[in-house]
Amino acid sequence: MLRAFLILVLCLALAPFSAPEAAAQETQETIDRSATGGAQTLEDIMARQRGEEVAPKTGDAASNARDLSGQLGTLGGASDPDLWRALRYGSADITVSSGGEVASVLMQDGGMAWLEFRQGPLAKYGGYLLLGTLALLLVFFVLRGRVKLDYEKTGRTVTRFKSFERAAHWLLAGSFILLGITGLLTLFGRMFIAPYISKEFNATLLMASKYIHNNVAWAFIVALVAVFVMWGWHNIPNRTDITWFAQAGGIVGSKHPPAKKFNGGQKIIFWSVILLGGSISLSGVSLLFPFDFPMFMKTFDLMRSVGIESLPIYGPLPTAMAPHEEMQYAQAWHAIVAFVLMAIIIAHIYIGSVGMEGAYDAMGSGEVDEAWARQHHSLWLEELQAKDKAAPKDATPAE
Image (tube, rainbow, N blue to C red; front, side):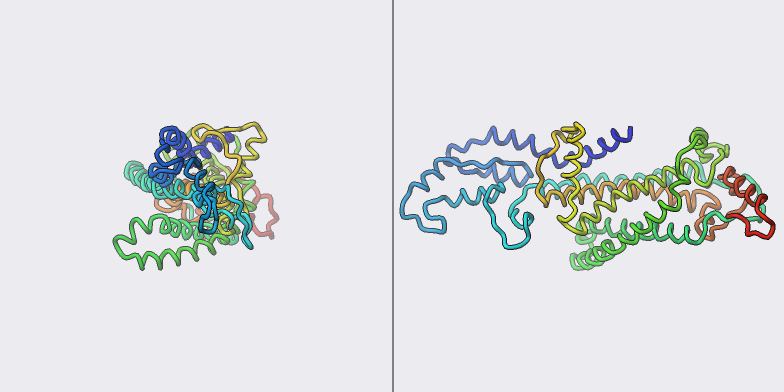
């Protein structure tokens, strides 16, 4: 099931990059170059600007140029268009003094498809996802209201999270918020800030966003690892999660399903942060060190090694990819996964603040009232109380 889900997500992410191929084949079959002696036409140029692939063509014009004597120019009797076609389609024999394979790619088609995807579907559907999440939470709050305590507060508290745990959580949360804001400014600044405020202000804002995003990313990665080490074993699914989901976590209805330190809903949040955050981090590192850590071609090779030759919607997996295409795929994947995780975190922030009475105390002071613990994490509270009874009287109570 997990493998199928990941393949589906990958298909949806890569679909915009595969669309030009079919259109390109259609274009190549219909364009008549006979009037130009085999040279490319205006239709070829327009097709390339739409992101479609146009195969190199040579014809009588090129052949005749080679046969002429006394040609002036750098190529002598050879045709200049032949050289430009070779450069255009990556078949020219390029030698560079530095930069390696990356510097030898002078023209590359994938940029048009990437730009159209970034300014079109990515911005459109990503924005709808975030706005739709906010709208749904507002409707839910109006209909359900705040989840309040059904038990009377006892005045006795238990330690929910220690100082180090809270520090790691807030480092992860704070860095992710900064990354999310700066990422959104980078994507939407040209659309909504430059036209209405000024291009200069947008440029300054984007420069600041770039430095914040690139440097705060390391804090996010460190906190992500710390959170996984501290809470990973607490978030392993168990049978109590089935009961929790069956009773909708007590958020819908009046039941209070038993739960240990983390309930079923919190486990979904946790693994979403770990898996999606890890994916964002890997693609982010690839973008921070361009061309040094390519991932997508290796992923496609790995998929082929297990018998996956093509993906629904996307089609056959590519067998070669320019270094620039690797970066375009990494940036697109980075943004898609970030949008999904932002929507999940918005819901998490809602529950941890206005959505549930007493929830903020767990990460605020780290101390929660026994009544809150009994209502939302009864099994965890029982474990703490059992440890306190078993501990020697002069020992510090378990936390």
